[in-house]
Every structure is written in structure tokens, then in C-alpha cells.
Length: 304
Image (tube, rainbow, N blue to C red; front, side, top):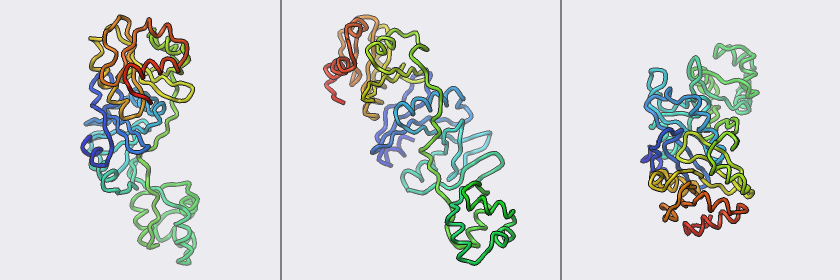
């Protein structure tokens, strides 16, 4: 998956191999950011994990994507878009075809089979061009007149078999491509009061809007009044957070955010790679978000 993303021109983070985790790779290209979960069987993506993934992508203005091989005991078909708890899912060949080769995706899987979306205005224009009534066309492909009307009003999808017949009869491409990098991100937010980490409450006191996370290398995404985002984690001592700090640094580099770990105990380290190391007692003395960001910049030498 990383190789496909790199060939498509995406910059990728290190693998997020700390548990629990709702995503494995973060990738970005131009203004598009992806959070990808890679599984052998996408049934292994739990609802809790999916909700957390959607929550994090909303905070980071990113898109979630699941890449896998199987679902419900069957191999995922190439060129088909699946969904797991509302998150777009596909196999790695489909990912390659879409990102590298630019091959559009038209077919999606739902209960009962494979379906496509029809461009109603194109269908109607092609039907009228051939002097066919709705009744004529419905008889030719064996569906009801109401079905044809609903296709033309963009109110109903159809099976792959029906779509093939329609295209053969009308001699025109009537399908609407799917966007696998979009999702319904309507998911309940978490408030900082849901967390018992003192570091997150300190961030909220300074003035950050703090969005706690439960299945990520960081404990929260903190956001200031200008929507600048900081991957935020808490720890006891620096020796215990080195791995997390490196992964957070990699993610912040890809997403254009900053990252910080707030420690209970003192530390001689000011940063680990591009993740700032700050002590709780230092945060207690800070009065506003700008002062905190200045501290991070002085620790990392990075201005974002």
C-alpha cells in the first residue's frame, strides 16, 4: 500500500505500529490527506475503530480509507468500491488503478449484489435522442417505467447488468463515477471532559479546543482559534514516549500539523525529531495558545 501511494505521488508517514490504532498510514498529496487502515479481512474493522477513524479524519480534514483482501469470506473484487461502517474500502489493485492509472470506479457493493449510479440527465438526453419513450426503454431492459423515471431523476441506482444493457441500447456512457476519497463524517465528537489526562485539561485551560482520541499514537488533536492543529500526547517520562514521539513527528510532517508530548516528569530533551517535549509545570505557566505555539517552535525549530 505504501508503494502504491508513493508511486501516485503521495508522501507517507511511518507505519503507526502502536496499539490500539484506528489507522496504519497517513498520506498526503497537494491538499488531499488520507488515513488508511490496512487489513487482510476488512470485517476486522470494528464499529468503534471505524467511528474513531472517521472522527480523526474530520479533525484533520482528511479522508478515511480501508484497504483489504477479503470481506465476508470472499475476496474483494478489483474495480469495486465497498464500505465498512460507512468507510470506503477496496483491494490494493483497485487502489493502484485509481491513484496511479487514473481508472475511475463505477461499481459499488451493497447487500444483494453490485450496483452503479446513473447520470440521470445523460440517460434522459440519450433516450430522447433515440426517440424512445420511458415505456419503450423499460420494456427493452425489463424494468418498470417507474425505475426508468427514477434513474433519470437520480433517485435510484441499478444493477451492473441493467447498466450494461442501457449503455448498449443508448450507445452512450451514462454512469456516474464514484469518489472513494469521500465519506460521511457525521460522528459524535468527544469532549476533553471524557479524558482523565491532566495534560489535555491543561491544553483546554490555555484556550485550545481539545478533541480526545482513543485509538491513535496521540491522545488528542488540539486546535487553536485559527484552526492550527497540534497532535497532543501525555506521558510520564521521556524514556517511555520515544517511539510515540517519532511516529507523531512523522504524521505531523505529512499532515502539516505540529506535535507535542507533555510529560509529568522533567526531561533534558526539548524534542524528539519534530515532536516537542514539554513538562506539565511549563504548561501550567502558559497563559494562551500563541505562547504555547511559540514554545513548540522554539523547541523544534519548525514554524507552522
